[in-house]
Image (cartoon, rainbow, N blue to C red):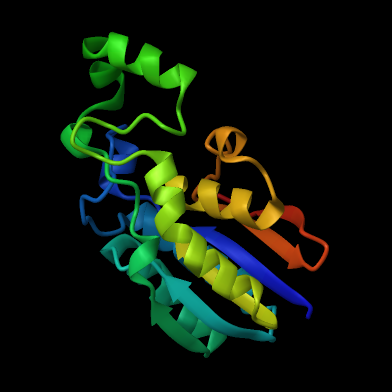
Length: 196
């Protein structure tokens, strides 16, 4: 079976712009984020064969997916397992200040990023466990699909689909204006940037 999965990160939020840990804080897109989502939707509308969109249940992802759906005119499913990594006690906190205040924790985490959860939060290993059934199910489908997720979620999904070990995939990055396209059965990937 041949398939393509367009991996989209939701548009920017105010927490993103402020440099804060976001995690499962359910915040809406900013004006910039809506513009990013509209630009992504225009590009994806050129791919007439997109049959389905899968979105995280978080509002920022659903808003992004809804903008894409209006252009693509296809089915949209909200997938609960795509919710972002739980950042626990650090959720909503300033990233730079938190890393300075908890430097010992972040030094420890840097040595075992895949397996070290945030305090009262989640680890990448736990995230991978809940994402694997969804990733496997999409791998079995034919056609072109869009997945609208989050920074950490999309790192793990790309690793699962491309056969990259979790210990490496946790370091993958994706900008808000960037789409990754994974093709099967080749398990190849290309990156598309949307003009800012």
